[in-house]
Length: 395
Image 1 (cartoon, helix red, strand yellow):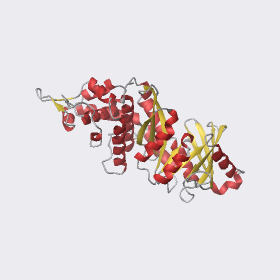
Image 2 (cartoon, one colour):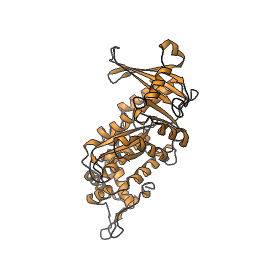
Image 3 (cartoon, one colour):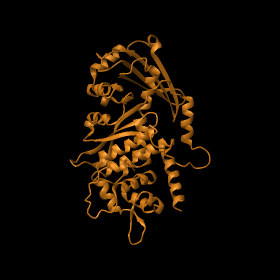
Image 4 (cartoon, one colour):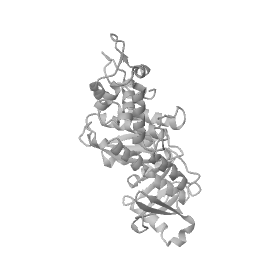
């Protein structure tokens, strides 16, 4: 609530009953339980909130009945539609950073008594079968996501760029861009707002620009791992020539990671070579990553080779480290985009106007981060546990 209190209130103070921080807090809590499928669902959850909870939130108290009351559905809708979304994202990312730094208590979600949930068992098992290499630096992945159906004032679609932590799976920050083509400038605007000094930032080929590389290494004092494709033909050709040759010649700088599950077998082979700024600003290594995918019977069905560059020197990141960073990068798809689309049904949302769509996306990010900070692997399972605990508390 201290973080949400920093969001400015654009409403007229004349006749104002419900404080903005109360509305935002109720929305945040409702999104964690009901998913924020609609503003009506948020209001319905808030309307069932117990009186002791509303008293703790310092909600509006009716002078005639003496009871604490919640805003109406129209008030929720009007506030979320005309909200300072940048300030809201800053408040949410600030709270997540506070928890990661242990400056505030870690969220607690009561678990259902009984056997450990399946995804929780898989997460624990993977840590044993695929341990992370020693000496990894804190890392985050950046990627963009479209909010289907929503439109900005100029008529274009709503695109959001977010940063997610490799280790915790929490969303560190988010900003809006005008269209898909502006994803690179939006990422460069988002990164200075985050505390990324000393971190490793993984980005896809769309962000492989010299401006982004200079920003990360020079101004932010961080490291990058970039994939180079057709948008950087000279860098890609140079990396390809640098890393050419049979596998036997690269045995000392090669790492192989094999995985089996989800109906397929995957093998990731990476080779690295030292380089310098002549290849790309701040570059210290180039790498060649080959992905072989096949069925569970061991027959390989597809092969993909990509080239990349990184500002990490060899003494900070060997082939095994780079292989781990690149694999963890796709957590932005499986641990953020997929959860928002499937668990929270974001693409089915009928909210369209003003800043409401982006605000609800920000609250979904907060809900995901809260569950992950509480060490829950399955967001849907955690939401059901939270819903049941809330129902028992109200009873």
